[in-house]
Length: 134
Image (cartoon, rainbow, N blue to C red; front, top):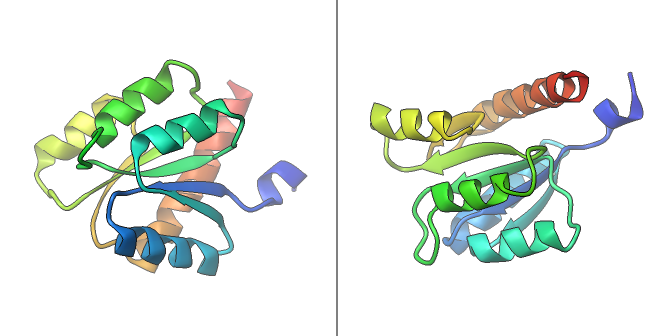
């Protein structure tokens, strides 16, 4: 196993709700992931531009200043190496289709459980392996 695939995934959590950020940070840490939380899409994008590194972003769909889909679109202008996992309280099929069409790896409905997050992180790891080979 290479050191790249054995190191902990670096997860960015972008959500305007403090309780969600804290809960997801704890959940990620419990799964052996490195997590860093951001209250706004702008703060997250600024961190990426100033050379913070993330393998995956858990990205809330509905935020006051800039919604998750807009964050995803702006991020795509300068990187394609960060897997996007959309978070939403909206369980309509149209919501998932929109996110996935715009390039998200997955769309999860809040609240997120440990099994669900663990499964998605395995998918992120597989996606990384495929994107490095391509």
